Image (cartoon, rainbow, N blue to C red):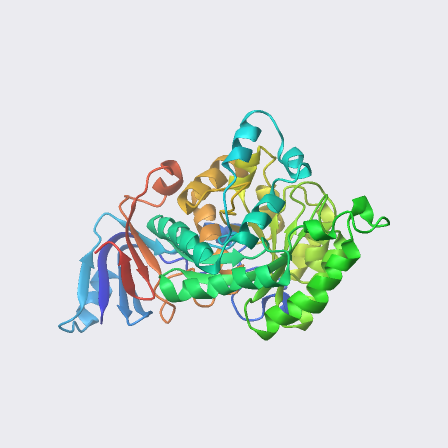
Length: 441
C-alpha cells in the first residue's frame, strides 16, 4: 500500500444502488464512460462511517470500514497513513463545463452590467464572446498556457481534480487549434486532468459578418458552418485534439439545423456531441440534443417539454450552470423538473471571462441548493459522479470504488451538508490526484 486514509468520519463513496441509473441509455451517446444517476439515486452517497480508503499507485484497492479493512492490510515501509477522524472524504470535483483557455479579461463589461446594461446589449456592441476572440487570437500559446495554469491552481485548491475545457475563442482554424493545443500542454504541466472539447461553433467571427447581403442579419452563416465542417473538424479530429464537439445553439447564434449539421459531421469524425442548449431562449436546442444523442446538453434555462423528453430517451445528461444565471441575472434551469422526469443532472462552473468567472465548485454546489432546488446530496452527486459521466469518465472517476482512479478530497468538515451550508469557505484540506497528494500533506 502507498496511501491509506483511515478513521474517516464520513466516507462518501458515491457507489450506485443497483438499477437506479438513467433508463434506456443511448449507446451512440454514452458508450463507455458510465450512466448518470437519476431520480432518488442522486441522493445515495454511499456513506461509510469510520471509513478507510487504501490506494496503490494511482488506483483505489480497498474501500470500507476501518475496523473491517485495517487488520487485513499489509503496511509496507513507505506507506503513508492519514487519520481523517471527524472529517469527510469524497471524490474530487469534476468541472464538466468550462472555457478555461482564453485571452484577456472583461471586467469593463462586468461594470457595464452592474450599471444596467444587459449581456445581450453588450454582445450587440461587439463585446461578449467576440471581445474575447480578439484577445485570444492575439495571445501567444505561452501566454494562454500561463494564464490557464493560474486558473487551474485556484480550481485545485477548491478540490477540482478534472475539468472539461472548450475552445471557441478562436473562431478560425489556427486559433481554435491553438486553444486545444494549450489543453494538451496543461495536462503535462499540472495535476488536474483536462478534457478537450472543440467549440468552433461558439459565435460567428467578424470576418463572416457583413459579407453576404443575403445572409441572415448580414452574417455569412453558410460560409462559416462550411468552414467548421469541412476544415476545422477534420483537422481537429486528425490531430486528436478533442474528444467532444459542442455548438452554441440559441437565440442569435447557431440554429437547430446548423447545430445538427455540425454535430453530425463531428460524430462522423469520431467526436462525441455536446450542445449549449436553450440558455437565452427556447429555440429547440434540447430537441437537437435528443436527436443527435448528445452526451450532454448544457445550460438549459428554457428547454421545452418535448426537448426534455427527447433528452431522457437519448440518455443525455443535463449539465446545469447556476453560476452563469447568478452572474448575468437570468432565470435558473428547471432542475427539479428534470430530476423528477428521470434526467441525469450534472453541475459545472462554466468558468469563462464574461458570463461567469467562478472557479469554485463548492460555491456552485451551494447555488444549486439555493436556486436550483437540489438537496446537498443531489448536488454532490451532480458535481462528482454525474459530472464525470458528462465527459465519459464515470467508469474511471467520480466515485470511490475498488479499481477506480484515486482522485479524492479530505474536507475538514463534520458532514457533507457543510459543503453547501457554508459554501464560501474553503474546507479542502487534502487533494489526492491519481494517488498522489497534490494539496496538503
